[in-house]
Length: 233
Image (cartoon, rainbow, N blue to C red; front, side, top):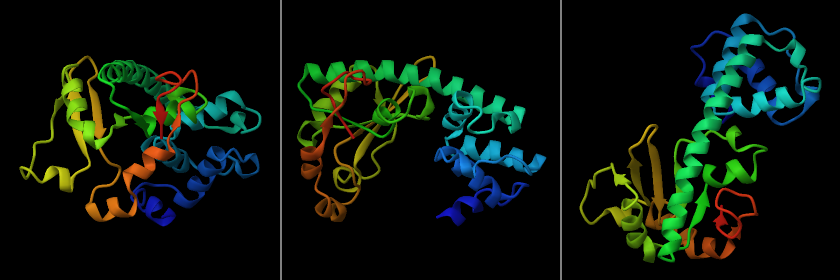
């Protein structure tokens, strides 16, 4: 898996292995593994690109900013630090917009008594990361019970969301797919994936029944994006 990650940057100048280990040392909050001495200009450029591409530049910047001595900020490349700072600011604004849209969706689904579980970034940005702007999010992912999926889909469409992936095989989507892709126009646009299951094929659904998953969810803590009580995953 690590080799596959390096392979994505094989065409870029720089020592991929060395850069990767430096970045992992920072993200794992292991100061003994963090040293910036010896990195060439090409290494710095690769480090900058790798963190941005992998969606971890925001967290890396946060660690350097909040604990500069621990992670040797004085030794860190200024251009790379600035690029990560700019990305963190962009992500923070983008996430604020997404969470505002999320509040509207959750309220609309609550009005028709549709249970919702927050998935991926919609939960993790608030529950795991120190600040919600540190987890890059491209869309909102929500899980609803399959029996209520059609009701949920109609309700979110009333908010202005429209499906943008056409049905390839009429009648087969419930068997071959696991979510609906929706988009809402606006100054930035909002992507919403409404899931009725977590896996895409019947074989895997038997192996990991969604009913079991619903029985394991826990309510979000107070202060999360949706407030206390909404299940998160």
